[in-house]
Length: 321
Ligand code: SF4
Image (tube, rainbow, N blue to C red; front, side, top):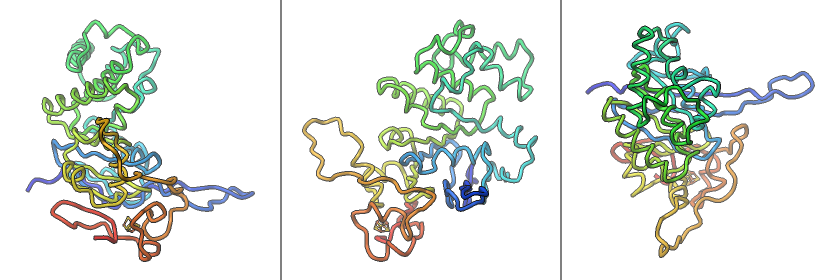
């Protein structure tokens, strides 16, 4: 059996909380608190959860844009967490990120050509002529035109800007792309165009995606498997269709109830999710979801459920199983 492209073992990121007169550490925000998962080559793993669940931090930890507090990230069996800065810079050619807000991630004072050329310059790829050719090629690949190269980010629509963000991520020919809410800022009609483009590119270049979103509806079609995060942990992980058709964790069930159904006749029988997400600096004891769970039992308040495989390839952390 081939090894997964990416393996994450017990990954943690704690941000210290300073307080008191002397600014001493008085606690931690446990943004990511012990994640373990893998992503196979050519696969799309969706990571979903409410804002503040740690999903974006996870993406940044994998790319080491943030240093983990603990744990291991293996990319092509290489331990990313132990690489030196120059080694990491070299590896970044192979791991890229697409941000939610393309406008914020594209320098407004640079032409598209300069923006797209930059990753090639950073990694010492090609001479000037080759770089220009690659910029034009990538613009066409993402559905723009080569004449767009001389324009500035503000001259494009939101959807076009995200296409530029995707082109930028693809410039160095990476194998893994972490897409952090790549369509959340776009109109619904544009969202599906960008998702279709990402699927086409995946097929064309054999890309592996980690697709981060707060909306289960968005990741459904693009993901092969989906992991649901709650307060820094994955609480359910399985194949996309299984998750949507037969969710096991009460939190996943509630999230799915919150996904709008495009049918005026459809009446929701349940209320979806209620209450606020607790603070990751002071997570509830036992099962972190027990304060909002409609199936909560006594054991849930004191004992944290283990994340275990309850059906073939279907992992869940809940005392009901
Ligand atoms: Fe609900 Fe208990 Fe399962 Fe947590 S462990 S999701 S509180 S039933």
